[in-house]
Length: 244
Length: 301
Image (tube, rainbow over all chains, first blue to last red; front, side, top):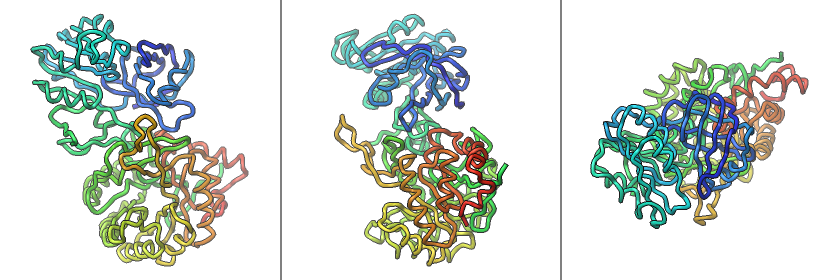
């Protein structure tokens, strides 16, 4: 964890309401895929937690969706603007259990945290399948990025306007060694029900601080109460409890 | 450089800065950001007799210049606080710490305080009376002078440590609440706890917080807090800790000019983990700007 002043190098729309922001500076606090950063925006009291799409050297890439006032204001940031960022928050994904053919399941803005993970798994020579799900074709992003890594990449849309019609759980491959997933909670529940191996889930929650101080994002698990920002956002399949 | 030393209920503090309960955990999260021994002390996470998970999520909402929380006193219960949290806290903080206690009956407050009274690390007991009284129809102890006095007296009977009563601002007459606590034996008063508030999600037309209502904190409450601290300082003789929306060294001075002996800093810690360290570093400059040699001269007692 570090607090750093980062400079915006790029902030571009890549799909409907979805933007890619490249930040430069000391991003060494970000050590694992699946971690997030917390951005301070002018005019907003709380920071905005955003998952990390990729990190290389002094460059951090985020993909975010403009859904509210804060992320809406983020779209107005320009090249050269600087931001206070808490970096390297959360536990991130563990690569060790991946096996030889890991499966990545991303839904909407749950896709970004899987990219750096895919890149690391590919660097280890794993055969990676990525299933990316969206509501409609206009929301779609990331397909070419995962393909360029050499991942077997499948896109699903709920309305069938792009790729296969259906949800990510309708496009599960026959065999995989392990899985990693991130997406809206209904999707995570479906993934939990339909997958046949162990895996890791990344959760989203409204946060106060993002670094474990406020208890704003606690979740009950098999192994006790966990703070999504600190002991999460990634939980193992075996520790997840679904509330009714 | 002017002197930052103050004293709180007879215990000296290197400076008046105290991170507020519920924004600082048991200290060790913040020890990863800076050496927390620079603080006057800190008030640890609100502790109850039994473990509590707290409220369902979402527990956090935002408002202009502040935030609303409905965490619901998540804590592992006093026994685990003593057996697990205090030993970890001791590794990173070597000064007397302020124990923050909540309860849902007078007896529960007394039991929790009696257990914490035995802990040498604990310098003060800060008693949060903003919780509903389960034996009093759910009305908060902190909105009724008689209930507040009962809790004060019950806690005083089980401890020799200074007892600081933390007041809710959600009352008509804050001075009457403070006097009731003082008359029942309180050694100090801290205020304000959060102001009740809520937000509605325009898209779903439903309250954002799962608990519907929560407590507002952050810079937006500072003027309200300052006014109440001013009123309480003129109503009681015991020391007063001022809190509510403090985020700068100037805010600290202003709160002490209203009569506070020390200050607590809450929401600012959640946005900037270094907030207290930065305010501390900036205090000498602010004191010099306003010609203050010694913080004790500002009217606290």
